[in-house]
Length: 256
Image 1 (cartoon, rainbow, N blue to C red):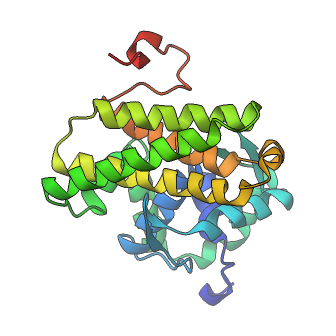
Image 2: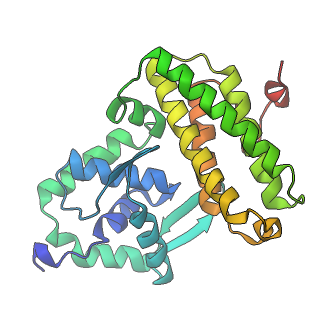
């Protein structure tokens, strides 16, 4: 098998073959981005700048498609979970010889170095250009204004699993903005993540305007995964605990 015969999805199966299980599609994107940029791996996915760092949404979609083919077990907990199957391992064995040895070594080195490295710290070090403090305050005021509007709007929705999740997640973001006292780089990162999350909630608000009852029928898995990343950032920066933590101290969420 020649190198040009590599399937586009090879890197997804390769990283899962090495790690066996990846929680959160952002983690999966992180490894492929670093392998492409830092490891010079022949990865065809195109990354664009996003609130969460370099992003390629087609990676998640491709992984889900590979799940339908039996190469990956795909599930959802707090975020998407991907696990390699026996058929997936066999598929890797079929194309692995087409991947140059030096590329495999570079890819493996990246996995060893960044497997336990938090995505938030990686974004601090690789993706961010810090803004002046005054601009941070302007962004923060804008986010607080957007939060108040969203809380008012979603308070008018009938209570169901989705509306309660949305209101709870917005409340969490509000408390984060009131509590945080971070340095410029971390503040820049956290504000960008919260901004990205709120933009998706605004889109959801626009889609349900005048037809509130449809919210209960929406699948919010992607939004829930975004919120998981927001919570992980808050834990990493020691602003607030994550709501999905079984050992959460609820007193930490009480507004002073």
